[in-house]
Image (tube, rainbow, N blue to C red):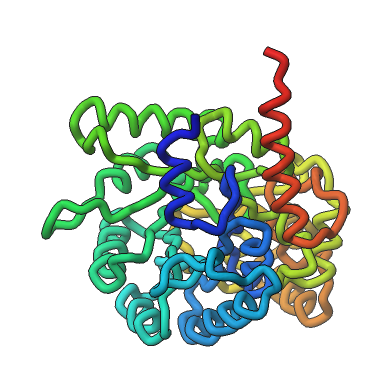
Length: 366
């Protein structure tokens, strides 16, 4: 019998198929086309708005138009009569909750879900969650956590007015494998995910949250194919997040050379690195110190390791950006990059991961 968390996810996203597959809100990658493609596959796509709030309204409208014109569009594909069947992701450290709410309220309909990540402090999460829930009470809030302390805080975070939980679902990010930004140090989902599931059960046993509380847990970090998805489900996840794997799709808003590098990189544990170097070289050093970004090791990082002056590295990097030289340009990727062998439509990727995971779990001989 399906766990209550799976049933809750289905009620939130009635157009989806189980197990739920979610497209991560990758900034400058997860645009309307990718979000719509994940939706068409029976998943939930998230727009990677990040902190570029000026583009929020137009991006939402573009995505809404793509979904409306989709051959699969029907009344069963909508979330509710007042929300849109996709999500939006914000990087909270570099934008204002108040401004984000203003933009969201300016849209004819809000997204069904909002994904929060990048809080400088846990109090910043409180500010964002309180502001969003008070203004958009029917919009779901997902929080990306990379540690048990974050799970503890987000699971117990509630409205000061009536005690209503503010976070609806928690995305467990295994930063030991995940591509892009995450906590500078942390575990993989192999250990963090089951510990998070156990911890939430402990919160219920000790009366810190109601025993009736249902908190869906999504797994993120290094999941590239049905085997990884099946493993995450076995570890206690109720849904699967795909990030790096979806970059290698025609719908992703990434440079073609970026995608080619994903296909041509193997042994991700050796050829990717979590570091702040790429952010600092790109002028993105404002990321809070607790975070780092995992990317493919290239000449930019090698220059850093070899003691090349930072000014020279920056000059070389800027020149590489102008020339689309991806031997130096940063390419975020997870340690699972060696499992990507071709560019495929996002719809096919989502369907293969979901259906393949179900087949693997049902075929176990014991």
